[in-house]
Amino acid sequence: MKYKRILLKLSGEALMGDGSFGISLEMISHVAREIKTVHERNVQLALVIGAGNIFRGVAGAVKGMDRAAADNMGMLATVINSLAVQDALENEGMPTRVMSAIPMDTVCEPYIRRRAIRHLEKGRIVIFAAGTGNPYFTTDTASVLRALEIECEVVMKATRVDGVYDQDPEKNPEAVRFDHLNYTRVLHQDLRVMDASAISLAREEKLPILVFNMKIPGNIVRAAAGDAIGTLITAG
Image (cartoon, rainbow, N blue to C red; front, side, top):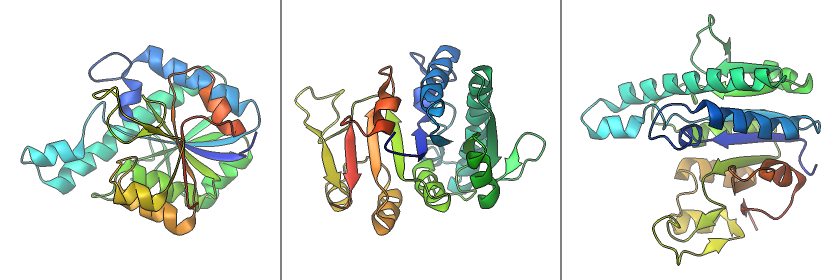
């Protein structure tokens, strides 16, 4: 494996399967099996999971809800997804810990950086829930922040498409996929891989970001091995 410690970012939509909302047990089981193939190769894995399948803070704000309140609801929704994925991972025999930025000791651990690193060193998968614990910050930003805090070598963003395109490939079949990008181009062209705060933080610390299609069996192992799949975003 090329990478020894990875942060995997999963969108909430990735957990819906073919549904329009909620959690697909079939899709979560697929994700768990894919993660297991990497975990068995002694790669240390941390996860951040979005909440788009349950609640979107921005959408709530647009409809008139206070943005901070809406984002707090979104962060709580990520805890629901994290507990669901934890259950699926442990059903596959992988020890897993959910660590929340918002304290809720009866259902998961509080986020403590040193404890998270210790969990990884002991072979446990760590799921970071509740974003950064603050409104106005997305789970993309939380992914980059946590990856830097626990010294991951790369952030891998699992999506429904096989990389970053100049246009939405689901709407325009003529869209062009990039094999490699730098942070500045992503920001200047507003390619929407992640929000601008996440890309800027990654650029500042030179943290690579790999965008790939999680639905293809075996892709996560290929990504961890350094195979040329998806789109790699670096400083170069």
